[in-house]
Image 1 (cartoon, rainbow, N blue to C red):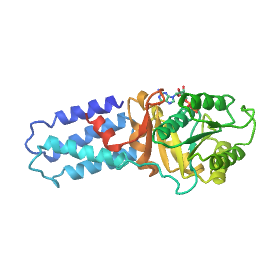
Image 2 (tube, rainbow, N blue to C red):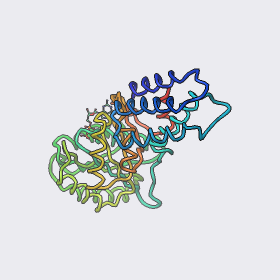
Image 3 (cartoon, helix red, strand yellow):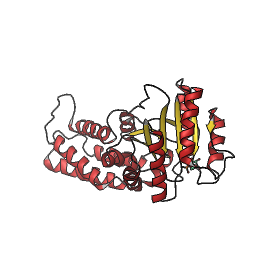
Image 4 (tube, protein in one colour):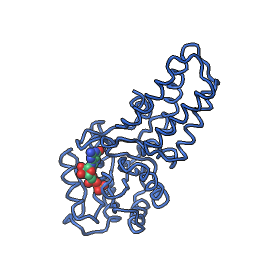
Length: 298
Ligand code: GDP
């Protein structure tokens, strides 16, 4: 994960080793190298600019520590700034005070929503919650079936329209699922919605209608991290079309660069809440900005 960026940054820091004090030229050169490393990682340009400006400003001697040499100080500053652009604090799920907590998933087809829905359900189950998965992706012929298969894998029931494939009204299904959850005392409802291959007005409208009907506690935008900066553009389209509270990055295991993870928070203002990094149902966790920064700088 993010191997190229890690290597690049580590080379940059190596060049500073043994230096007694950083000159203006050292700081400029370091900032330039960091800029190149971030651009190669496919980080969005405004984020790169903001990041390097912050590094430069802080490196210009405002923080002179007795305990750290200049190279260590730069590593410390980069670490703190990485944590910052990754979102700072870990953002945890907000649960409803009364009645079932409703989590709605939105994103493009192939983003990994259906897989993610089951992973999230398992994760919640392991924390003692009793989740209900809801199949509102009635566009893709196999989506309901796929959610049912995944639900079975994690031992979580799936609420789906009868007979299950391609028919029905997703808004009605979503509404009925909340009634079912309330009646049967499920405490979290995870609504999987339809995606398309590209941003599409009809898809957005449907997601918006579902959102209005079920009034979710959390809308999570699910996006494939491997698409890099395109993830940011897609996020902006969903932000405008549906609105969301947090981001789930999927396929981080296949993301060698890290552009989506490092850009999305700054550009959308919404935190990355979860990371999915593999095809196994347990390859899923909260997104911890500090741990992620630590891995990049490892
Ligand atoms: P949806 O169309 O958004 O519902 O996407 P799916 O859940 O069907 O996922 C699309 C493909 O991505 C499937 O082949 C999944 O197995 C795969 N996938 C989902 N999440 C991950 C992940 O975190 N890592 C990897 N390597 N593959 C994933």
